[in-house]
Image (tube, rainbow, N blue to C red; front, side):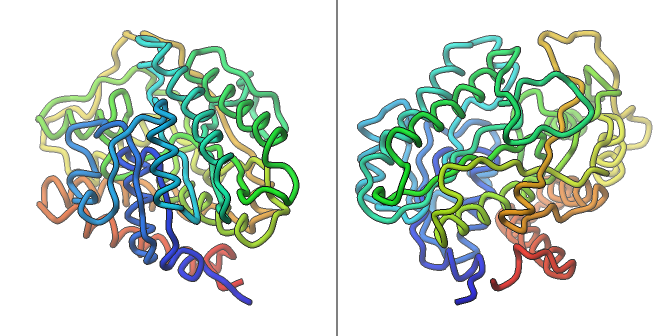
Length: 371
């Protein structure tokens, strides 16, 4: 029987940890548009302002405030809601914060993931879970080709180490408790990074830093203007997470696997390139310099990190959708329309989700089709 994301998630019960964060809010909005019944579990609203609050998502879903390090509360929400799908995004996601408070990062990202796995171990109904980590889970030796799912895990900084450790926790739990056909839960991990998009106000992220500075009529300070990143819109990896969850629901063949979700190779652009693109879309006031370089680099930053996404293409028929210019335009126009144009955040977000899906269908990407 052919299926699609709409068929899979319409009326499905979906739990998202970290639903108040940048990725979590976009995923919540997308699932709402698909007709899912969404339950969110997050420790707090991580930024002010936030996409979650601006979009009024608390009124659209079942909204729980709770820490993934509170196993009893987390398990209680899962047992009561009885989700068909779980997306685990809750994490300490800022590299600079990991230097200020390493134990907060380790407990959130490692113990938090262990608690999600432990709560899922007690599930006795069909459930399909995607555990989201990061491209920084790999031992980054800054080679020029993309990391594959079989490459070494590691990390030279606390944040990267916590993501590598989360992957190891997943692997050990899977082999100990979820292997074979006797368990009700099928699960996999997803790795992505360098996402941009409207509604991100996290600290030390280039797009958020630009919007904060330009909105106040100031020049943004940047650390590494020539650093190259594989920029991708937040909807790219989210389309991968949804496709992976759907595939888990259809077959046990992917149970216990890990998948990379990254942009097209041509998405690699410098920080200055991205600032230039955003500045044109934002329509900077005349005479304002878009950026200035600061010598303050308080923590180690990798200059190169790419993912090889062949496995996602082969197993899931997933591939990235947007061109760089489309990615930058969707990101910049979201902020311009919401902050300057005073349009409703949720309306703009849902409109961009619809546009993203339409682009993918027009390009005949397999993951958008009935299959």
